[in-house]
Amino acid sequence: MTAELVAGIDSSTQSTKVVVCDASTGEIVRTGRAPHPDGTEVDPAAWWDAFGEATKGLLDDVKAIGVGGQQHGMVTLDEHDEVVRPALLWNDTRSAQSALDLVDELGGPSVWAKSVGSVPVASFTVTKLRWLADHEPELADRVARVLLPHDWLTWKLTGGTPVTDRGDASGTGYFSPSDNAYRLDVLAHAFGGRTPELPTVLGPADTAGHTPDGVLVSAGTGDNMAAALALELQPGDVVVSLGTSGTVFGVAESGAADASGEVAGFADATGRFLPLACTLNAARVLTATAGMLGATLGEFDRLALRAEPGAGGLTFLPYLDGERTPNLPDATGSLSGLTRANMTPENLARSAVEGMLCGLAAGLDAVRAHGLDVHRVLLIGGGAQSAAVRAVAPLVFGVPVQLPEVAEYVAVGAARQAAWALTSSAEPPSWQGNTKARLELDEPTEAQRAEGHRIQQRHLEAREAAYGVRRNLGED
Image (tube, rainbow, N blue to C red):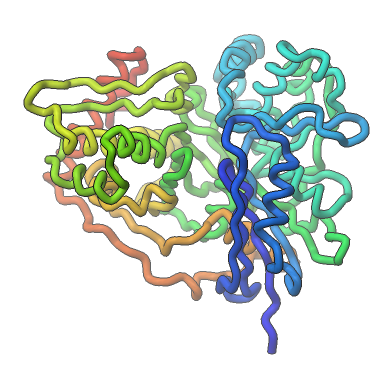
């Protein structure tokens, strides 16, 4: 008997990835990939071209497709459904002041957290719309419809009415996950009194439509929600993903409302919630530092592993692209504690690894403070393949760390959603039987936890000294 096949698409910042899976087991049978242009804004047509290249020859016998897309991006269409301007991506920080203005104008952080689950920062769609209205008013006047990246690709596949899901919608800043409804008052305030048409919010297993060839297309979702769906997260599981950005998230039965802005109160792709902390700087901290040292990534790992924990007193704040958590869009990287004795390639490499992971550890503390139990960390993403990261992560996180099998988890999660829509069952199919053994890193000893605590505290003290951002580890 021939297995039914489903496809999952990950339209990320840097590329489109596709996996074709057995709908019953999740076994991956085919894959594809195509690059995206670099930058923080892009013509959405580039995503469509990359989709065509990545899926060429892969979809002939596929029964359903799901799309996972980078969150927050702003795609604007006119009354003829033509793109008004290049899409602003999540990592475009030009709307940082717009975010501050909106938070102040609508009652402050607590009001935002209660109304939409999150305090908006420059990455959120609502802030990009305000920036557009203020800085490109003639283009803003042409906007008739606003979509997210995954919404746009799903719409291109079906040719029907634009749709989204509550997971991706929860990252716009004008959707309430707890009420499961758009906040059109917030949208109108941000966009000069106007409320462009928004995509219909579908349920987790709903169908968005069909391609011209009759292939079912699921609702799709945001990238973090798709990764959570692929990993079939259970209570106590918290994911740390080290890609272009770094994310920390787990599933919850109730939404977060963090007035500090450190935790975004997102929805997930199953009807639950996905409290999440995000940093702008993750795996590229490693590649940038390796480049500065004139080292390959393998050589960089060997350098970092030759240094002692604490990097001889060097503290690296790796805000190379600004930062989102804490909200420091104009920040730059800094290195403190330099002496002639510790100024070595080994210590610099080690400090880059520790600095990147300390940023994620602060995110781990933040989601823990908002109700997530943290029994173990699942470490995924390109940065998780670094030997130095694997050595340092248990030390800094202070809990057991496991590495799931290397996979394109966003694409796999999108494929699992497609299989769910194909069957119309009450729950998504269980693909755990296809999950290969996970690599379990050594659980940290008490002495190692204490050393990790000292490294984190030094990182937080350096952050406070440089930017006035306070957070006392273990005391809040």
